[in-house]
Image 1 (cartoon, rainbow, N blue to C red):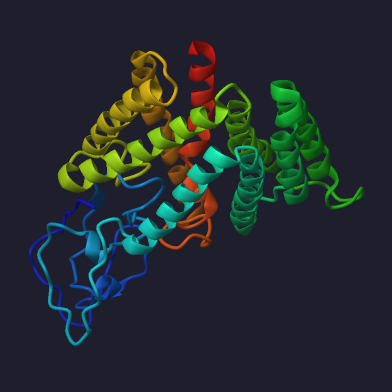
Image 2 (tube, rainbow, N blue to C red):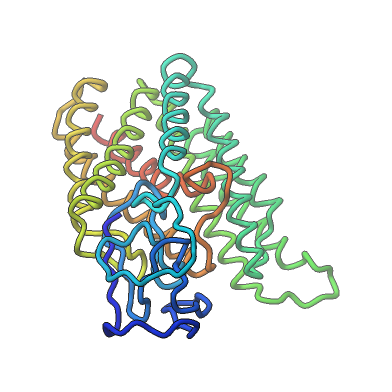
Length: 359
């Protein structure tokens, strides 16, 4: 990805001296290269200016350190006897692995939507269970004691009750699970123990319930409507268009960060690329797949770019506060399941809202 590195001064520190790196990284010996590549004087801020694919696809400056493969403009410092490593992709990931996993998942979901759409409900349920487990595990590592059992079981109830009972089933399951979470966290250490951080942990538990299974349930509600498989396929195509457009424009032209305090890699150029790709995708899919007014495609394309980008930023901030790069390691080149769902989840709700209201 296109990133710029600002180095303080032009002097090269003497061999063996510690060089402070901005963020939480430990001091590095002068002459040692980050990630095995050419060393970069790192006393100034590192700003990632390109948009990535889906979640945190680039190495984030500050907390995550400096990715030698992502630097596009910086004076090089001799790395001594260190053996040079293979250059990393600008995405900060194993790009071939990421593409292979993405293509496999995409083709599998398309096949399910075209030939066995009801199977998608089970796929969504499993994915939400894994994503909830990933997030709750990371939260517990940060000493946020969210109740995992009621979170996962309640999330399954939200997903599956959407099938026979529609939005009423979703709302009822969400309300019931919220009450269970509140009571569970109150007494999870026994009747004699005083709860610690009860308000914080309960609030984050309900946030997780709404963030993952509640938003995912709108994909199930969308699937159950007339031509629901094509509606779900439309919203999935538009999210991919947004990701690809943002990645391409960000890598090629990204110079101006959108919200560097939250996600330094997001650029306005990448956002513009997402808009162009998603609007074109909306025009084509709504017209050709749904046989509807093309202006609905324009509205849907713009709306999904906004919420998909926001969803990515929300997960970036959550991971920043937890001090992690990925929610999990299940998907090579991507991270965890949740790292692929950050933009899909809010997009499912907006797609359901727009298509239900206008079609």
